[in-house]
Structure formats: C-alpha cells, structure tokens
Image 1 (spheres, one colour):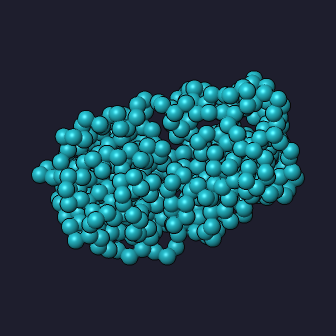
Image 2: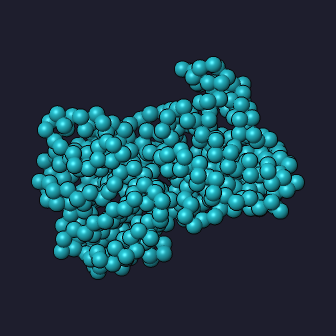
Image 3: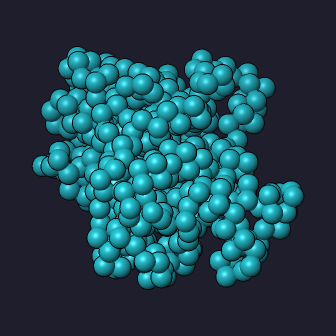
Length: 465
C-alpha cells in the first residue's frame, strides 16, 4: 500500500507536510515525495528503499515554500508528478493499485498519447491516472471517468492553484480523512499523522466522494456513495495502531482480535507474545482474555528496519526479517509460548526468521495464532501479495491435492476436514507446535463493521470492482 497526505494552510505548509507525510512511512518502502505550491511548484522525490523518508527530505523541505502541499510514501511508483493539462498545471499523488495499468496504457498509446514517467520498467500508474483524468470535459468529470475505466483502486490528491482536490476510490477500499486546526486543513490516509501536529478529525470521506480543500475550507464537489468495501487488512496489519478508519481505532480492533483468538483456544502456556510490531496488539488482547502474562521474547531493533512484508523483492524481505528481530533468550528458554501474528502470508519468514530464533533460544513449545484467516487470494486493490503461488495456504492445498484445486470451497470452511488438513500442513511447514487461525466471522466482529462493508477478497475471493 501507499500513504498520502495533503495540507492547505494560511502559512508556509512545508514543515507540517514533512512530518505528516513521514507518519505514513509504514505504508510503503520504495519512494517518498513532496510537492508544495507557492509562487511556483516545488517538488522532490527520493528512493527510500534503503533509508528513512525524514532523513532524505529534512534539508530539502526548508527550501519549499507555499500554502498548499501534498506528500506520499509510495510502494511502487515515483510520485508526486507535476502535469501540464487543459485544467492547468497540477501535482498529483495516488494510493492503491490500478490492476489494468498495462491495458489502459496500451489504449492511450494507440490514441497517440505518450508516457514520460517510467517506473519498474513499465508505465508509472500515477501518470496514467493523470492522463485519464485529463480526458474529462471538467476536472470532476475526469476523476469520475477515471473510476469508470480502472480495475483495482485509486484514492488521489490533486493540487492546483485553487486548492487540493481529494477523491476516495469508488468502493472506499483506501481511506481518506480530513483534519482541521485553527482554519488549516489536512487530508490523509492515516489519522495518526494528525495527532502530534494538533489536527482533529472532522470528516471521513465516503466512497467515490470528491472534495476540494481551499481558501474557503472544505467544499464538496461530488457526493459519496453509500456502498463501501474498505480493506479489512488495514486494521489487522497495514494501519498504524494510533490510526482510525471509519471511526474505528486500529489498536482496539487488534486487542479484540486477540481476545477472540484466546476465547477459541484451549492451549496452556507460560507467556503470550506478539511478533513486533503489528502482532503486539493482538497478543495484548490474547493475554487480557487468557490471563497468561504478556512478555517480549522477541524485540525489534527499530533504526533502519521497516516492515518485512512491504518490500517488493524477496531478498530484501528476508534481510529485514533476519536483522530486525532479536531474541531474548532469558525470556524464551524453557517456556511454552503463544505467538500472535497479524497473518501468515508466505510463511517462510515466520519459519526461518522468527520461530527458528525461538527454538534456538530454548523455547519448549510455540503455538502460533494469526489474527486473520488463511490468505487465499492475491490482493487486486493494493500492492501486497503478488501471486497465488506465494501464499502458504495455496502451497498447502497443492501439496494435499497434488495440484491447485479449482474449487477451494471446503478449504474456506473452518469447520471442514480439508480446512483442518490444510492448517495442519502449514503448522508442520512453519515448524509450530500448534497453529490456529482466526475465524472470519470473529475478525469481522472485532472490526465492528458489517461484512458487506469490508473488502475480504484475500480471504474469500469475493471480487466486487
């Protein structure tokens, strides 16, 4: 995923833009960028795959001056882009995944368009988005037309002289939230970016809603839709504990997930632990419900090591997983451990870089408890899981069936014999004493939204674009 941040201020916005964007650093690992509009456009983009966002921009932001600004932490494309168009010059950032980028780019090339921004050997999807918007008769019509043509999701911030236009994707898979402080406005993916800067939440954008933040404050450009399918994984893993989506705090959801895991468990243990950082809230909830003490057998060495899930290259994911977690032998040795994790995606890092450290440090038992059901399908709406072959559950099905079964209905039913055989296979594969996944109904209840308002595609395969 990517994270975006925008600001409209009565004074120079560069400082708040720097820190507000930096509070999205957990959302992506490839590029960071900021653009400010004052007397002219100021823009900087940096590769942040091997360094932290703030360190790359700490000196440059001092050169940026203006009342409008947008920033991004990007999981793939270099952005913001500055585009000359019939609507005037604008800067644009986007969060999400345009799943049919190549097909749309081919259509535009046939129509005589050219692409100047290339990313990872292909078309920069943010430039594609800008070109599709430019095909509308008006800016708002162009944004509406964009959502008619793309598959996947794209929430955008578009900055021009009259303000920042913000559009949440049509089914609301990615959040956008407005904050206000003494007449200054911000809009962001993550509300944790508001707190230390003194902004208070004033509005959660509805799916498909378009607003403009300008000198007259917040002005609605297009009403939102009532239908919603926000990504459930935001609460389980992707989001920051201090953030809220749809008014529901991430940390509290994780605690409730942990409580459900404990309620459905009968294992005896000496301690409960979470895989840092995203497993910690789940583990705290498990400890509160079970009465087992919460302890830290694994500690994260924070400086320089981000999330091992987000980098696109496997070798980078493995390096981060190897180096960031340090075992505490005196806590581990001889103990039965319940280990809460946000999810099991590939399973290789959990086995090779987490459980291995516990076993080598003398753990007596390790009972793994993921806070969500088995991941069955790659995400089509954000750049996370890339293919079915990567998923531990699909490898289990292949091993059990001798092929990747066309009908996996029984494997989606947590009360079926095939489901249990799949879980047992994964448990052996990752070298856990026992493995029990969260039930999907419990996960939904922990989040607190009705099932139809959540995107559960990666668990169920439901695909509503």
